[in-house]
Image 1: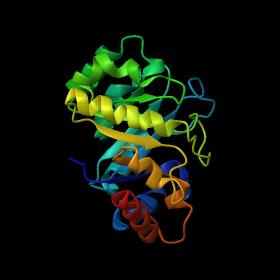
Image 2: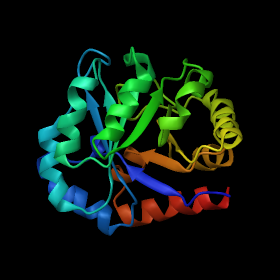
Image 3: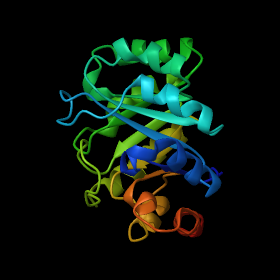
Image 4: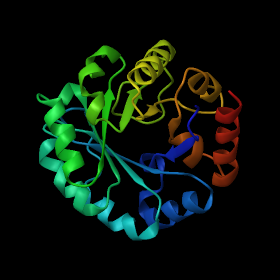
Length: 222
């Protein structure tokens, strides 16, 4: 059974000078989650935002905050983000020495646990952690920068992940991040994704509500 579509605008593309208003605007515009990109200047080149910003935006929305940790040593940051109000915390398979333990740690804090894969990392690496995974996030660009073009080779990977989750009876959401816009949404959704991170495809448009509605219609119609 197909899951309800989730549109999760990435605040990395928002106006940071007025972040509270930007959060309220996409909430009012009909999005489902708030996607929160954390970069450490080590796992990926840029440095973005931390748990203090997550705590600051928490009062501005009741929607789930979807924290994506693009960081080395993510275990050191998990508790802070849980306390800051995150609903999902996603770590990278490539950054975790003991992935199963990290996912169980996230869950022990009352937060849903996600695991992300870079474009070159095989889906099969997740086979033995599905029992403690609430979200699988497939990067469809190489992480670190917004506004990149979708890597179409990832479409087959989305199909593979969808089959793996279904065959395992795993109820985890399947999220895709990178280059998701009106030109690629139908392809991504038809491959089996149900949760979609959109940065400039929402925050780069003059009408957030219309942008979100158009992306949702494309996903639902795929």
